[in-house]
Amino acid sequence: MLEKRPIVVDENLVVLGGNMRLKACKAAGLFEVWIDIAYNWTDQQKREFIIKDNVGFGEWDWDILANSWDETQLIEWGLDLPVFAPIEDEPEETTEHEPKDICPHCGNEIK
Figure 1 (cartoon, one colour):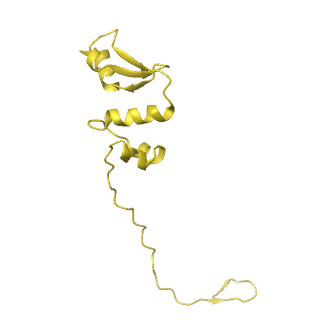
Figure 2 (figure 1 turned 90 degrees about the vertical axis):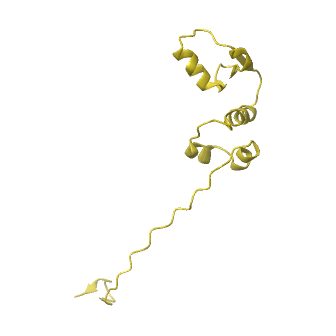
Figure 3 (figure 1 turned 45 degrees about the vertical axis):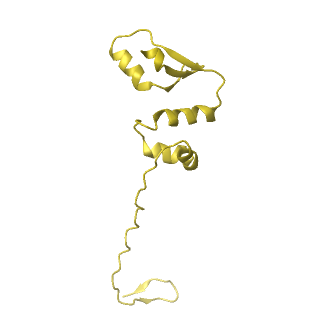
């Protein structure tokens, strides 16, 4: 059945698609698996394939996607990005202080 859904690798045998199938094959004790080698793909083509191959069922590291990938491309490739609520700044502490007398010569508080 693996020939119907092969593991896709680049010319350096880096897995671009099917990493979970490869993991399952290893767990099943298989020593040979069906692969499809993507020769001469650009880095852009590899990145696009990785996203598109996982759109329907992949697990995502949102931090990596947010910091290493272009949001517009991810959306174009079919990934539904979550909308995270903005992190609110902590309110500054406001405490009432009595005005202090400051020495005009040294800038220290006069007690």
